[in-house]
Length: 115
Image 1 (cartoon, rainbow, N blue to C red):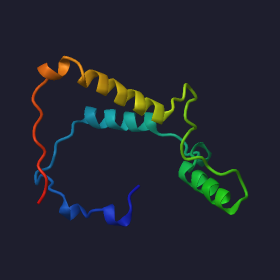
Image 2: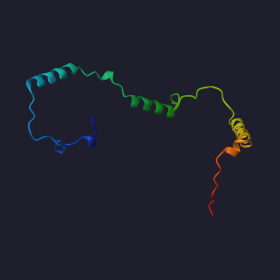
Image 3: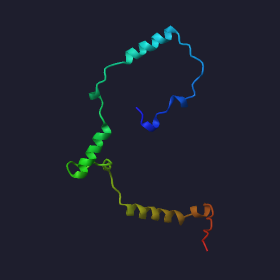
Image 4: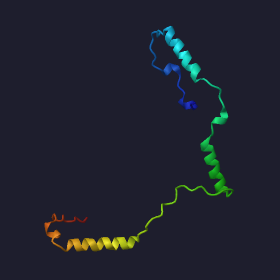
């Protein structure tokens, strides 16, 4: 199904001018394929999931239902203190910088400051 602005006129299509020859075998095969894929339409087989989700959000905002959680809860594991990790990282950098490695490291580029 298309919205009105998506429907194009057949005049806009670049169709071949000549008639296309279709053999009787091709036509019967096409009819057989359409017959095999044809069935009764049962609207109860289809659900508007967008509408259901939207109704849940509206009900949650009205306070009639549980609020919808946007993201699942973060997995629980070992929680590290960010400040402790930062301090440990700074200490490791200081220890690394005070040894022989500093002499063999590439020379530092001067920092330019805006005037």
